[in-house]
Length: 55
Ligand SMILES: [Zn+2]
Image 1 (tube, protein in one colour):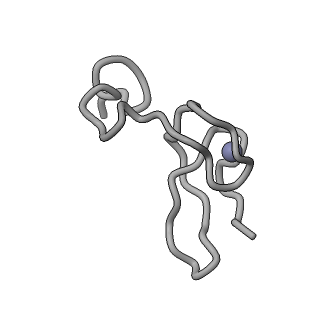
Image 2 (cartoon, helix red, strand yellow):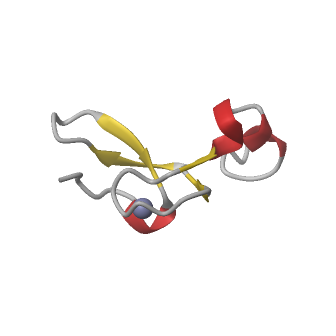
């Protein structure tokens, strides 16, 4: 497995893996982890919110 959360792999992602975390609201943070949305869907979240559920 390559490092999907580091280096150039990030730059190939939309918005370079950065954005606003939908759970904690941090802006310009790396969204490389997955939490759960209100409908049980997967959400890209920040490290702090890894595995958390929205709402
Ligand atoms: Zn977060």
